Image (cartoon, rainbow, N blue to C red; front, side):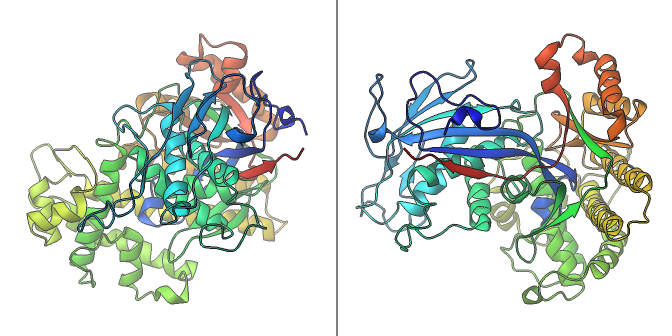
Length: 522
């Protein structure tokens, strides 16, 4: 089979003679549910048609004029984009018996990843990390193969289209495949058992921690589990689950890149990771306010607070949607406890670190151990009220978006236009909340969503982590061409873009299937 036939990409350079596997992973895009996955609330993403592909083969089987190390686990990585230089790296392994008492959790395999200076191969390493320590630890006779790989992709990093998550998922799949861990016929041992999609999602989430991002799992789940022609409702509590939410006919989603680069790993301490800590602290304070059971060292999530408040039994599965909606509405009346005890002259709704610790009921030392010892954040005031307000309202919007799609599918008499308009309204409400309450938008995203509405979008919102990156707009299918033309002419940062550069910045897309692996036989 010719690998060049995969999704129109040319995966093989002149020196890459023999491909054994090609891992394909699609970028995900959030229709609804921004910044609530790591609070364990359900979200509604979809995998889009743009993708990342990695061609790989064990080096011992390659005919290469460039030589290279054949040491176990050694990697030679190249990128089809010339601005990314080729890289070589190898994992280091601790000698058996070298782990001392008190270092029980020290991992056997290590790869150097500088979280303060991330490069393209950092995400390749992140995907490799989990494979090494899950499948090559504790057995001296089991060693990873040396690998050559080539990466190509269709969406720029930092665009808000989950390029980092897609890269980590693709990398994880690559190293599983090239080491034979996806082979259903392999010996059924601990290191070669069949891997479920849920296993892959959990491993990819853990792997992305290696680049300093405390991801909630939405991007990874969407990249792995998505179906074509539907958004995907993903729930994380009480367990990972997914079900399709078919989108109405006549609706097309248009992604538009603000061209403001958003690298959530680089700005995590003031943006992404700070929001994670704020929601966690808010959850503890709410649980204490509601007299709910909570352990001293427990990082309770906002979704768990809702469940405990209404007596949800985890073993019985997720509570009925109607009950969850009622609980979310009730929570809205409990949020004042998250405001500062004494309102400042400027109306500041944030609390200081000392106020936050006092409201949590923990000592300073215990609070630091639970909430600050594992992540770097930077803030003078913590906006607990605003963050929780966004999370609960966004969770409600996700449920309504999903139900609107399901009702329209079940009842053919529903007007597709009315359905699209309601979905658009929910997207607009989400953008307002992301901007004002979660404060993860930026001037360019606000401008781009406003221009999208002026150009005829029924709804437009940021997508991805925010602070730059992309917007997603819902547009009538027969208006897509004129919509893209009007936005392209109106958005100032598109003025200098021509041809393919403009087509990569703003494009229509439909939901697509998730990650997969192609194996090539002689």
